[in-house]
Image (cartoon, rainbow, N blue to C red; front, side, top):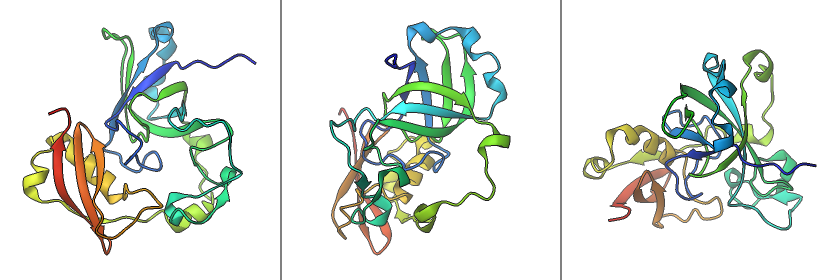
Length: 228
């Protein structure tokens, strides 16, 4: 079997795994760009792509590669304590570290100094994640109206109320605020660490945003610009 090689890498606002949405499409305001490797910077390879609204990304859990795999994992949305079968989850700790995400295609820029660039939204990938393939989303085939979501349906509406002091919100660029609010509402704490009142931090768009959570309310406490 031929060894797969990345065709592209994605640029997002998440320099680490912490805080990334647990599914694609949950936060529409998250913007990302896909840059292609030199061998794939061929405009003809993208002919017709602009006619689609959404894409499937096949990518590598590059930060979760391990020598061994477990038949059961602990989904964060179940509190990080209950084990489920790995094939019943989207855990990154799999026999093969392959991820699948559906994103909205915002723009196809074919002729840039870096070659073709795809601008997408709703991605749940860390900055620099390698992408192995891109396929168009087909509504007539990929959307199943009567599909059942298993145990994931029980927690799909989970979210936190966010209190963001205006003096701290003003430190965040306007175009990044809605996306950051969405990230915080989704509760970026690790599933196994939900201590009330504990200070957590998430790195997003060049900022370290520190917060506490108590009784379902996330309160932003501090913001530090990274690199200063």
